[in-house]
Amino acid sequence: MSILPTSKDAPTGVTRVSRALRAVAVLGAVVMAASATTGASAQHPAGPAGTECTITAPSPGKLSGTVAVGARTSGEATRVQFYLDGDLIGHGFTADGLPGTEFSFAAYGTAAQGWSTNSTANGMHRLGCRAVAADGVGEMSDTRPAKIGNDTRAALISPRDDEDVRGDVPLVVEYSGYGALPSQAVFTMDEQELVTATCAPAAAHEGRPTVRCTATWDTVTTTADKSWDAAQGLRVIGASASVGTRTIDVAPVRTFVNNYDLDMDLLLSSYERSGLGRVGRDGGFSRELPGQPGRSFITFGDGVFKPITGPAKLQPTVGRFGNTNAIADVQPVNIPLLHEVPNPMQDPFQAPAISPLIGSTELTTPDGTPCQASTWPTGIVVKPGSDDLLIPYWSLCVYDGWFHIQAFGIAEWDATTNTAVSHDVFTNFGADLSDKYHLQSPTFDGEYLYFWRGDSTGAYQTRVPIVVDGVAEPWLDPTQYAWRSSTAESGWSTDPEQRTSVLPAGKGSFTTSISVERFEQLPGKPYLMFVQPTANTMSLYRSSSNNGPWEPVAELQDVRACETCTQDSYTIYLHPEYSTTDTLVITMSDVGTGRPFQRRLEMPASLR
Image (cartoon, rainbow, N blue to C red; front, side, top):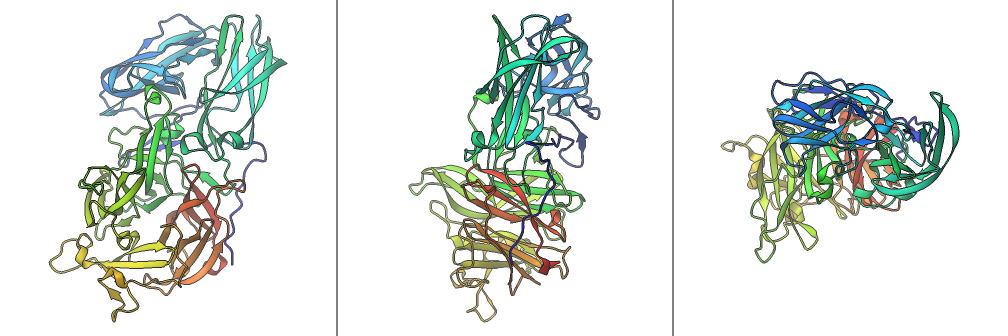
């Protein structure tokens, strides 16, 4: 039996309707309603009394073209948010991008470009700002009048700001005015020339002569098989034209390229959706938070991010092989917008934190040289008797352009403060840890914690009791672990060399991808196991208990992200809280782009 991709409603045109940034969850139970969409009302609750923000530029008077917008804060802040008539229009930074008190507006995708008023209707407007500081997001400032008076209007008609796009996308910009109008316009993507368009007369705008410049953006060619920083996801589109010595820019807009098949979506966080930067990482493990109904914690491996707006755009990429974490609302068959944690400032557009789980400090190369240390989470389970989470991880020593696993550990994640205390369990500092200790995908049956390991030879099970006399937390004691073994009298051996696969020979994963979860919404509340036998296939098994036996359910013969994709997919994980009796939700990562995405599969009939 094959697993069938689900059909998902989508427009038949070349673009997909934008899912604007609507709900931004922040640390704890605080939820801020926000909109990062120019032209859509941005509703924020009043911030805490604390760091205040004051508009310092431009001076009152007539404004035209591209102008500098500045703000000052009453105390040190990391960033400010600028508003026009109550709508969020962008972000402000200090000159060096570090915390400070003097801030300047930077257009999306630029290091320091000012605010293009050409795209704003002539007339009176009001500018405001809010500080993002250690005491949270401050209250809205007193607003300053801004009188726009441009001789030429420049309006980017397509794409719209905060729009999801795919395939061939129309590029359309209009110029209106009584003087000379452009004959050509240059469209840009991430400040790089994309295409030159010829302008032609169009219907008058508010009685003024108008020209329309059109071209086509082939999003497949410009983003296919690129590295994570040049692939799908956030791409900033701008347009510019010249009349004589005068340059007429439009305000650049955020677009989100998704050329995956229609049953898939990129996993984006509020940081990327806000236009601040791009995020690359693997697929993620998730667990609904105990004590916080309707919210799920998701942990990712191989995290990296690159700021693209503000002075940090000029700095190197942040992170490599690191762990990142996020929270998302729980919705049927859809993992919605992610919100990065930790987030101590309750920043609605928090950047990822790289490797907050890291525990090992003794990682070295074989010759004893300290190396770049990082962590890779391998699952999530609720800590027995607690509302906290246990997150197993591998500690990585990065050298020779690759990562070397030297420790397996378990982090205790406080779901209230979003902080971790990490404990190494199995270690081999200075050399590679045996893959028999590379444990993943924990499950809990009330008596034992179970872990899994998948490789090309099979799927291997490990367990540790949760209650042992005289041992406070047995999962932190390496002597308490046992491996499933068909040769041991009890079926379990404390010697990992005696482990045996729970699947037939050769039915494991060609990568380390293995995911085991319980699906309580299905009849019989079965455990499901996903493994990846080859680069482009997946196998699904079921069992009535953690201890098997495991029965084959279905095969998926093509796990590529799209029909035209040439790269493999990996880090494939199950997500019970987002799945239903009809739809199985998984996350995975595209090797070519390093971007995680979710995929919806039809639940096999035998499981319903």
